[in-house]
Amino acid sequence: MTWEPDSGSRELAFYAVELAAEKKAQDIRLLEVGKMSIIADYFLIGSGASTVQVHAICDNLIETLKQEGYHALRIEGYREGWWVVLDYGSLVIHIFQLEAREFYDLERLWYESPKVDLSNT
View 1 (cartoon, rainbow, N blue to C red):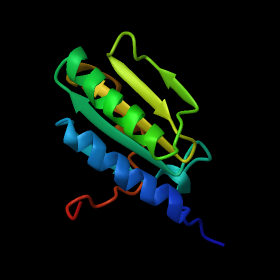
View 2 (view 1 turned 120 degrees about the vertical axis):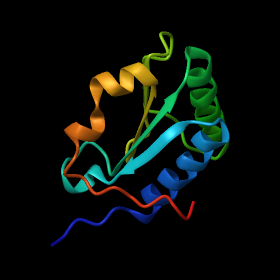
View 3 (view 1 turned 90 degrees about the vertical axis):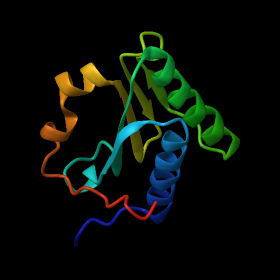
View 4 (view 1 turned 90 degrees about the horizontal axis):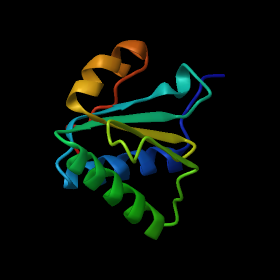
C-alpha cells in the first residue's frame, strides 16, 4: 500500500500557499513529507524579509485559516519572528526570515521529499 495525502490536507496546503503569497512570502516551497515521516502530510516553507513581514505572513495565515475553521494546534517562534512554525496537523508551515532559512536549510534536510509543483497556483 502506498501513502496518499488526504485530499483535505492537500486543499489546506494549497490554500495556505495562496495566503502566504498574498503577503509576499518569498521562495514558497511545498514539500510532501508524508511519504517520509508521520509528522505531517505537507511542509510549507516560505521567507519574509523582516520580522514585520514574517508576522504579517503568519497573521494572515492564522486569521484567515481560523475563519475557515482551521485552528493551529501549536504556534512556535512568533514573538521572535525569526522562524515561526504553525502546526495544523497535516500541514506544518515554516515562515523564516531569510538568514534563518539559509541557516536551517529545511529543504536540504527534507531533500528526499517530493516538491509539489506550485507553478499553477
